[in-house]
Length: 249
Ligand code: SAH
Image (cartoon, rainbow, N blue to C red; front, side):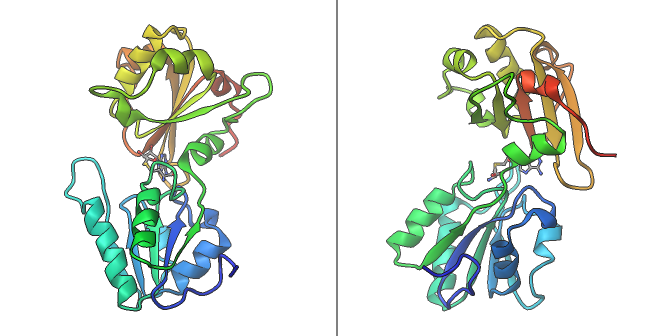
């Protein structure tokens, strides 16, 4: 097998994890491929710092999906990738965090495979792990949890696919992506499911970027709207938040 970082061939696509934002958290393969490709199709959450690693001659195609704003739909994105590849371009599909964690990377991989386009996947550091680390919160702690759940907060509205009772009973630590807008609903659902009002919670916004911000509160604070979260943020719920050791100045 070719190495992850070996140069792309014409007509090849790399689904690359761009990590949470800071360019120095990119993998070596990501840095090499971003710096040596013909086109980059990137999500809105991919930071300027990461995009700045591209050659100035590289074509940049925004394909962001972000709550509320006009956005390319998924079919357009996969069509664009396939068209660029068929034109013989060396394509980097840059996605925030890890391409296969709440990023629809799987759909893109399936579409590329179905179209007969050669592709590779470069994992990235996912926000659900990086953001707590930046805040000094260990997502697992021997004294707190032997398991952890990563969830999407989108599911909290309307009919939810999440079984709150089961989640609250099974997982001592819950990490929500896309949970900012629905935070009061998420918190209320977890209180209903039996979690204690004083369960600690952290909201980490813009992790690894210059304006990173961490707020800590309780589940009750969040359910009653005493704390608000703005996107993009990771919400960590559980006693690991009380194990926090802030380490940044
Ligand atoms: N594939 C991405 C997740 C995409 S879903 C990954 O693996 O990280 C988008 C969500 O990711 C946002 O709503 C937010 O919850 C989270 N996120 C991405 N970047 C973030 C950052 N720098 N700080 C905090 N949360 C972030």
